[in-house]
View 1 (cartoon, rainbow, N blue to C red):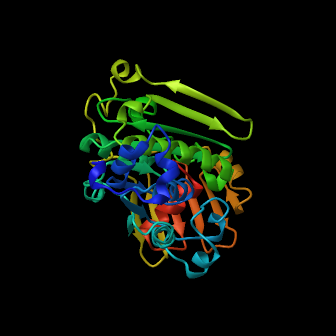
View 2 (view 1 turned 135 degrees about the vertical axis):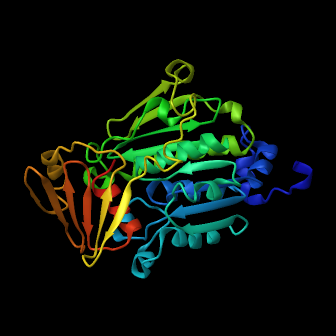
Length: 349
């Protein structure tokens, strides 16, 4: 392999690292990756792997660049905000200037049960840069079905976690989290904030795992969940080596594919004449509306009663009305994708 490849000087320091070497770099330069979500984690992951010399990177993201992204989403700048560029396009523009030898394919779309197989069909690894568990569980199903490893990562506040899932060899996401948290039951970056350094640490862990896989060193992947907090600071790992055979996971042991089949996907309905979209979670929840209202208190005008909570987002023509069962009406858009994005940001789950 190395005889067929000339390793550019730009990778000289990386090649000198004994864990990678010339052979590993040559494999990396022929590898293909797909990145789901190009926000905070995604931009760090994309830049790190493109600088490292991954051969091909497909970037999938449904959102556009906003001013609030610039604190932690390292590929974007004020010009991208001014032009209202989709994140996938803005990221591709930057990455091509960073390393023109890497093939970048930006796709402005929402990953769904309908398109996930085609988007993942020709890659060696799937990278998680998403902001919601529904998409992560879909990625997990697709990974198991297609036999393609994926690297989970998540951050809120000052803490985050990461693990690598290798189908048939390691625990999968459902081994440790059988189902997504109920809508409104967990913090999101928009309700609890997030620190840039936490993003950098978790995305770096994901990038190292990707480099091991893509350089042909799957045996170096440890079956562990790593949990970090950069503010305390703290670092701990959870050994998952014995989880898979013991827990009879419905996904990786028994073969269930609820998200890939679309059975556990939130439904959206455009409300005619109202400039609004209703988002209905796949499974009904029992929201604590008082707790949700408290988390929203710094985001805009909040009103609530025993039946619903309403948020008028400061500086945006966006109003969210959430009911106890997790259903929400997102007013200010008739785009289902934009409504799902707003739901993930402000409600979670």
